[in-house]
Image (cartoon, rainbow, N blue to C red; front, side, top):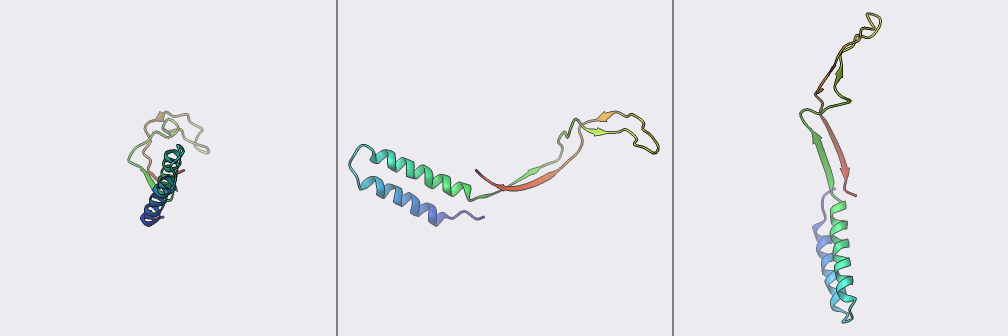
Length: 92
């Protein structure tokens, strides 16, 4: 999902407005808390794409054993095994 800059701007504005409306000692705390929440809510709406490339070690490597019906013939574990992958998710 695309980041909504207009909502972030409004939330930051509202955070400062909430602090300026009060002269008590908790005004700074409320302002900082609302700023942190505005930033958090902005960031968690992002879609994040992660790519593994080009080589990773998967379970120690590739098993070179020969399966039945020709085998079973034990073989070595060769490492690293080439693998790639892509995943998409959100921040939390």
